[in-house]
Image (cartoon, rainbow, N blue to C red; front, side, top):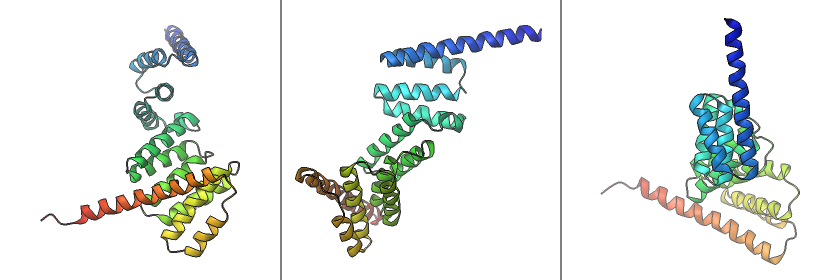
Length: 226
């Protein structure tokens, strides 16, 4: 009898393996809807299969359904955090989601998303940069400077991204009242074209404008109702 059970288990594993191969093939062909349908069936048969949630989340992300991708990645982490560890695609999804949340003036939620991205795939430098900007919006200027220091250590290959990070760090230092240090950062920005320098100034200005809007909103929330 145990032998029969073992054979049945082997057949099940083989069927699941074949199922995943078909799904991978469809993803490779760009048929994300077809792959998602296979992952749906796999999850129905095994709702605690964390790895399939990761795979379906990746297919959703490639399809452009970021919210659904995030839901699947969250579910995978809830079932088995190890299943999603070091998955660059999942980390990028959280990083993208965080940027959307920050643009929607939800910096606290954005920070949570960036922290998930860093936990899943620590080598990625981008979430440090994006979390720094969200930290500026919640007025954690020291934390923003710390993140930008890490980013500038990790990401040295792109002059414009370096310039953006130095511009952001200069803003954080100025908002802390460290005007001399802020000027040093501005002076150390690498040479970029006039067009890119204009983009840099606009970028930093947009962050400061967002901060002013959030300050106004926070002030209104604190006002007593008449």
